[in-house]
Image 1: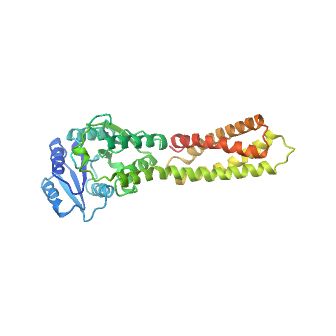
Image 2: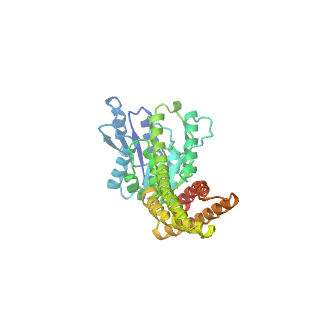
Image 3: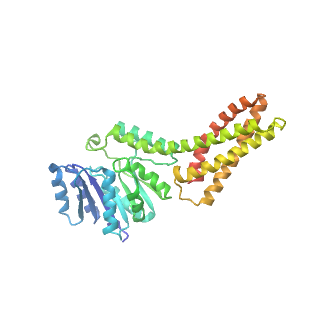
Length: 358
């Protein structure tokens, strides 16, 4: 199958209004033949919307007896598709509030079929005047954080219109998170697995200032940013513990080595030994716990040590230069070493993220 009928439409929904049935009708009229609706614990007053949708032969309704969250609803749909529709090209997630047009669903699905092995993100134009203030600024902040702290360029971090090839579904099922934070965690899981995504521009539609959304700005934003900064914090702890090892060994050797030894030789030995030990520790922790890298160990280790050698050279050169300029003794050399390595840490973070463990 090469047309959009080979893509399953997934619609998670909690206590929907009439817009859910508008989404269903629009998708069917556009040419989609398989729709999976997930009733995520809706109350009795809203069950009729699902019953009405289920009258269409194209629609399958899956039900959670209690609300489990959007992430869990998506996983339920992914599991159903893998078990019952394994020959489909992929799946596309759509919000049930009619903010994703049938045309955009179709365009993202065709892009998915053309790309074959990449997720397609339906991205809105946040410069559009119709975008609510909180959504526009929330996306700008999250986009900035993703780009500069996570190394991911994503135009619309909050989009619910996402199309996935079938090969991605096992990874998505294993991704942590059951509520709105799941859609953020998804990017990290796919990135660690070496899976890519592309963007498709879609129409910007906000109905009633997004009033029907179940997104809680403070609670759910906290969970989303906790995911983002959890990865940063792990890197920070890994780097700081490695730095403590490096700093301790450097100062121990700098004190213990004979004072008759030339300053340049003493600094070189102390710096080299300290960085060798700390880098082995840091590489192992970063690869296994921080980045959870799937790249070949030989390649990542080679790149890591290219970076480490550059850092050793720069650290040695700057500390030697500054200690000479200031005629530094052992105490001041320790302070200079601290300043230099803090600056190098900032550069190392981005290089490891973008090159070593990518």
